[in-house]
Each structure stands twice: as structure tokens, then as C-alpha cells.
Length: 87
Image (cartoon, rainbow, N blue to C red):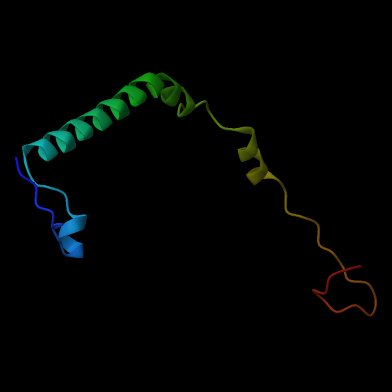
């Protein structure tokens, strides 16, 4: 094999691009499959906990606040404007 002493010059776009070929296809394919398998494994591992956290356990205690009575009417003091904050 002989090498030239003169360096090969490439433009910027060509220098940034990778080679096309079957090896790149396999890398992308296996990487996508491994990511999908990892997501499926994580979902399968946490599925029982997710099912328990979304169960309907009846009305919550916070829902009782909606049945509270109306607040009392406040009467402003003499000389105060209605709706003005009190000190």
C-alpha cells in the first residue's frame, strides 16, 4: 500500500458526514431495539406500582371541602372603602 505525501482535502460538509452502509444500519437498528426493550422492561417492572397508584379508593378527604358553608359576610369599618384590604 502506498500513501501519498499530500493530504486529502475535504470540504466542511463532507468532513462532517459519516459513511453510509450496512454497518450504520445495523447500529441504528440494534440501538433502537435495545432502547425499546429497555423501556418495555422498565414499564413491566413498575406496572404493579402504577396500577396501585391509579386505583379509585372512593371520595377523598379533600373533596369534603366543596361541601363547606359559604363564608360570613364582612362589613367594612366606618370610613373604609368597600373591597379595600384591611390592615
